[in-house]
Figure (cartoon, rainbow, N blue to C red):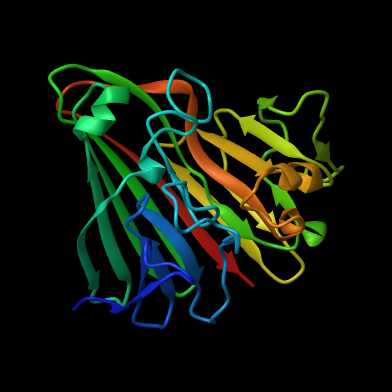
Length: 286
């Protein structure tokens, strides 16, 4: 049986449509085929766990600002392609939806190469996004299949925007990891307990992270577990950055932090006919 589904246009436009899916226990996600994008995740208690900007331009082909953008085949500007690649602005296909016997909701989206994608990335490929959700858990699996006759390289990420009050939040699990700052002359604010507190712009890549990462707040902890993705990105543009980003409210930096499961430092080399899998699990503990 498919999850309870509702499709609706975003406010003030008919251009981009999202569909809302409900699991057996009432947990919900909304998904857009534009970008294969998870736009919303409400746990079974009705609380929204992802940040989505109210200033996203739904009339354009730009990426959706918030939720979980899929980054492929290039992270940021670390290569010759457009920033963050093309998957997050491509039109995906809904393959199937279901409610499993245990009540979990399940959504399967896919993206194949096209004449347009091959102008940038001259390879045949298939992306599959499996989204499984219930209670207070969201699992997102990205499969990359090389359907070409030759090997190719890629970097990728699930660019997850977690809703939080940044002043009351900290991040556990990254202290001691090797990292690279994307903000010149910045430093990370780790306290004596190893908690990372964000009090300014941060754009940091943590490499080969060996443990789970936790977003700790006064009333809940969101645990980020990953497999296949060796790296983690933490991003918050702070006030100065928000002022430069047209689809972010000036105070948006107070209400989210991106904790991204990623494969960046060492590009994935995928031989012809093979498949790579990256898995991210978000789990909320009150």
